[in-house]
Length: 506
Image (cartoon, rainbow, N blue to C red):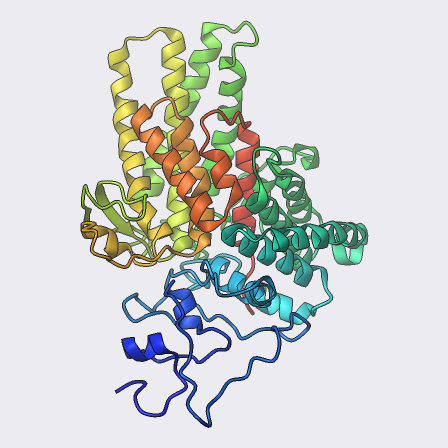
């Protein structure tokens, strides 16, 4: 029997008969499961004297291990968030835990490197190797403080992150000015982390300057001395910095960023579709913006170019391996609303968050293609009956995105299968990285003209939930229907997500 007799376990773990980690001043198991921490029973001979606050110096706080989760939640690759709303911790204690909490909440280790890249998978060993005084260590601290402060409403931590961020920008500028240190994996990750910081703290008054860091990422990936062996992936990043293009892009045969690392002729890289679609999309936006006179032939050509990608989209989805395909675990109840994101319908799970994110990138890009066709048909004045195919396909794609939401945002997607009876069913939000990877697919649904207004509103509500519960400021910004944000702003934020998938432990 667990935690009976003489024990250092906290009262809550004793009551639940769980193995307590006995972390002081608060049990990490209780923190991660969002349970009220009742304290420790201090028997004679086992008295804990808290003589001072936790130091945030060079010695790290005890790691918040994301694999040590309550047994009610699956332990393998658990999506349970390490961060909580810890009213019993002061700012100094939260700061001491922030870096390890960030690693637990935003880094996704690859379960199988032949199938998945993970997300920020090699970041922690990269930081350990670089040392506490390095730019990358400071960048992690900036993002960690911002994420903890934003999620828990601690303005003091946000102010501290802002000050470190300002100093780091000057240091990083010096680093990337040096040819010997500019094009390294460390420099790339610093740029990614600084962009992630901007995404976390963005709001109406400060939409964020992550686009500047995207250009830094693009420059590093596209440089002659880049540490990354990417061709298709490099071209994808170059699209966000056209100045770097010295010659027309060639179709690469190498494995790109947006596909499984395994070289498999049956798996077509999504990069190749994006490379073809991006110029069509921007040309359509320019034509249909209403700012200039356009010809019917030009609109028809754009529509035909978009439709020409239909086979590529269909081939990509059909050619994925069994491990990559989503698995339906059931359907959610119409009354299952405890989270605010469990929409009625089926619930799908995936190999991991990386695979789920790639699928949603395919879906949002396919949805954008259908939107181009829909808008062109509308401009041409074609019979509304001709829109039914696009609307039917769009409905299916949106249904698949919605089915992936519990996997991204819940610590246990199966909890969305049960009805909300109001009897205290425990449902834990997932790691913030799930919300981060879901931002841009959800936003595309909210602005697509081929999607119903009711579904658009539902996805805005989901974005608002991510902003409130996961502390990601850009989610709140994207949830606002009057936020007139350029598509490039959104696309460049998505690029940062994929750049975070380019490293792994060696």
